[in-house]
Length: 262
Image 1: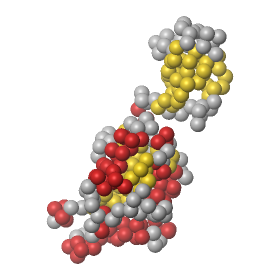
Image 2 (image 1 turned 120 degrees about the vertical axis):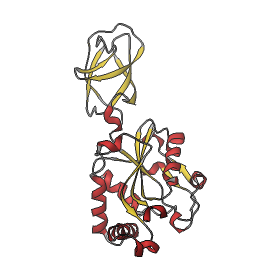
Image 3 (image 1 turned 90 degrees about the vertical axis):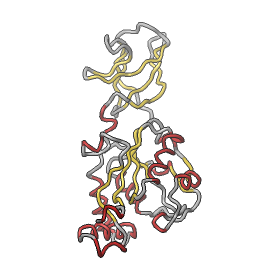
Image 4 (image 1 turned 45 degrees about the vertical axis):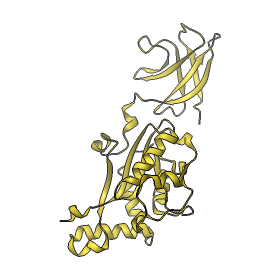
């Protein structure tokens, strides 16, 4: 939504008919030179983490052009509440570990419980339990974050646990951009032996509603990550086809490799 300009007044305009950036500084919001703070001082509703481009006309009216993301704000890349998680977008963050039932007899009770929790969450058989997991995810993510996810393997699975998670998180102050990535062709679920190569996702996912993602920092979520290929493929799609500027990756569970089980 375009911000509504309110209480507009002109201090000084040195050059007409030029597009200028609106600068948000500790002393106020200005159009024009950052050093001299010359130009128009503008206030509008809900000016949070944004800047806009305007055109100053000869009669000193200000014409709105477009909203831009303010790349100078360090808060733009504060996706997680844990400060160290915000330092490296290329690294996938996760909360719990998982291993398949075949390994439960030879791993710790704690790992078995985390793995059981994963299966309960994915099966959606205990709504109260799933909300508990969602709340644990909720406290890890900042507000006002744009969220997307790896689409479910089935095209008609709008009740998948990851989509339920995004709806839960968006109800608590984030933007749900899960509609940007849609599975248009069913694939074999990866945990059931499906092809993990990136091309599997490139061939079966289409992009929509790109304006929700374009030029933004995005948090891409999945319920379980094993090889990381699904997240990396969707990250590439978001950047190449939707114009995402930065993509952070997060999974609730990470599947441990056999070499990590001891």
